[in-house]
Length: 387
Ligand SMILES: Cc1ncc(COP(=O)(O)O)c(C=O)c1O
Image (cartoon, rainbow, N blue to C red; front, top):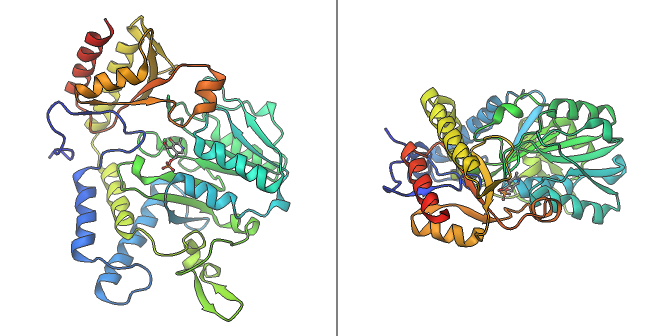
């Protein structure tokens, strides 16, 4: 069965780096939640609530399994998106544990701005590290003493990866700092880069990994020794007196509540569980199809003399501009042919505009839904527009 059978003929969706298309089993799981057990989780004793609880707990377990992290050390909390996850952590860190905040030049505005706001709020200096062409960080260039390091492990404009992520985490921990990984772009197609990495927190967006709109924070239990809880409300307490409360998170079983003030997006959490199972069961053929499509499109773009690629190597996410052609106009022309691609700076203004000095760009981000005929169509249409 084709899990993306709702895609119309000739419709080419190239914006998976923003939001993946959702496969049928994920849509079905959400529909099932709404039509069969629409209930609040983790508080409700009636039948529907019990079913929701089972599914939510299963999703938490599946996230840890997917990332190869142990429940003895890590907890999974749900939130709105990657941006919220990073901000929730930074806003609750106790400043006296740290000396500075560090990020890197190729970041999405999500960590880039959040680290600026953290620095402004706390008065701690902020340092922007340079990422190498292959995505790594030259550790010898930096002092991580008591640093809060917030970096991506895969970029959203060319997919380059933080190749020495394990060494970075080790170096930062040795210097008594913490590492928050932005894994928004890794989870769908390159989760291996972050699997088993013992960062202090890993934040990602389920909507970029074939799941519904939802954020996830996977955090090491000892991170809480550096936090003061300041986002509080329903679903987080075991008892409340006139001027005090007892946090449920003190109990290991309910530790996840620490980052979950208020009601959660239960249907979306159930949908994420379905997406993780779908990704786990995906055939070799499906991955091979993505790889072939990526290579064919990359080679085509690379081979066009008018195309200037930002990528240094093939990746399902590829960014470029065409000489003498405004990227927004190109995007509009492609849209008229039913090819949906993004234009601009993709929330990486600092690096793409101010470091590289590039004009607005166009991004093709492929996904598991793309068919070989999509690539044939892109090539044909691009040739018609460019030449
Ligand atoms: C690398 C990276 N980090 C963070 C984000 C922010 O994700 P969200 O808007 O879901 O919070 C994105 C979104 O594209 C991203 O690609």
